[in-house]
Amino acid sequence: MKPLTRALALLALAGLALGLLGAAVIVASDHLDHRGLTVTILLGIGAAWIGTGLYAWARRPQNRIGALMTWTGFAWLLSAFVAADTPAVFTVAVLGVNLYLAAFVHLLVAYPEGRVRRPAHRRLIAAAYVIAIVGPAPFLMFGFEAHCSGCPRSIFQVSDDPTAGTVLDAITTGTAVALVAYLVYVLAARWRAASPARRRTLAPLLWSGIVLMILVAGSIGAQTVAGDEDDVAAVLMLLGQIVFASVPFTFLFGLLRSRVAHADAVGALLVRLGEAPGTDGLRGLLAEALDDPGLQVLYWVEGGWVKRDGQAAQIPSDRAWTAVELEGQRVGAIVHDRSLRAEPEVLSTVAAAAGLAMRSERLEAALRRSRARIVEAGLQERRRLERNLHDGAQQRLVALSISLRMAQKQIDKSPETAVEMIGAAGEELTRALEELRELARGIHPAVLSDRGLRAAVEALAVRSPLPVQVVEVPGERLPEPVEAAAYFVIAEALTNVAKYANANAATVAVRRINGHACVEIRDDGVGGADPDRGSGLRGLADRVGALDGSLALDSPPGSGTTLRAEIPV
Image 1 (tube, rainbow, N blue to C red):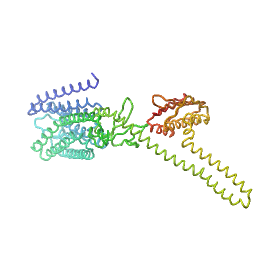
Image 2: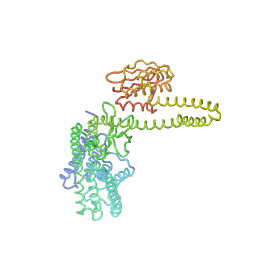
Image 3: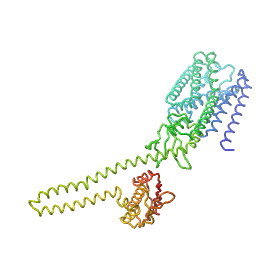
Image 4: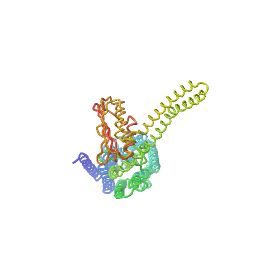
């Protein structure tokens, strides 16, 4: 038996023992009427609260709602001891007779998460417990017999004059009514601020709690105004007990209805995941299954969250989220209403069911993100080329044009000077052509177009400042986009080796394996390369990804670096 199951079983036995002891006290009481009916009501309501609480506790151990319901049931059973004939037991029991109402207030404020985070709400709960215990004290201290004929004498009684007790009772009653009014305000404000999904979760307990608190406040007020024998107060108190007795069943009904509804929705989701997801994709199916129109689906791409269109995203602070993993790897997250955290089994089932579909949409989002970066990189490259042309070759050509016009004017006046100026213009033209060739090589090397990938890679190896061995390159031509992608992967990798690797040598290999061009660059440098610290490798990953390829980096510290790219041919 699990430790939690054993503990809950012991609590159930403790509740049974407390209920039977309370029933025995009621049956033996000399000052209580309708003892059989009282025992039935006591045990029935106590069993409902404790049983439902233990069930909720077992289903959701991390949520304190089950524990609070169980505590409310135990507090209710404690009220049985006001039937005791022993003065000491009777007096203590009267002080605790309203503890179940304070426990119920605690439950209302903590529902549905089971935790109270706001300091104002904590103070509200503390005030409820204080009022529940202090409330009966005035009568126990001053003239209690006037309010309970035949009851044992209070051990705290200091006077037989009920006047002081009446005044103090009016004060505590006013405080209790104000406390109830504030509680109703808090619950109503929570309802107004809740989303539709959260309202469905709050409804079973919240509305019954509001009704009960209003009935309790009404009965207390009626007793204060008209006395203990007032029929209105008695009716209100009876209605309050009926509502209190119905709360566990209302909660249980809502819980079971939620499970059945979500089970049906998850079943429908599993069926529809195999069909066309529609224009709203997976998000629409999940929103319908979890009954949360505001649900979002985010995808885990390159260490961050992105939307389906590839745009970067953040998880909203006012929403909860459930990670979706497939084969031990995170693929995305379902961002949902916080109230759904009360159904962890449903969320885990939905996340598991959505894993495959989310992986497919994640690839789509990653591709869109890569394409967006490629477009941005293209724009930046065009701006760079524009600057280079403007600041380099264009300026030389402008200067060359001016020099030629000046030489033209000197032909008749000073032929020797014109000849010198034309010679200088020729040298300037040569330098401009060299700059243009270098610029053109950065855009697309001519050797790659004219002689193929092998010659282009060998040219890169020759120009590298460290020894580079070309191990293997296919002799036949590959498709032009594949050759270009492979060339730039090798060029960027060799540049990084020369700049950062502190290597002595490198090797380059390009092979055709199973319909893929497999590019591999190795070096014997210091390793420890991190693709997230620069944009070069990310740009290469985007370039390769645009061809449905993949890029992998293996760079353990102190053991060199290996960069591999696989591009479908």
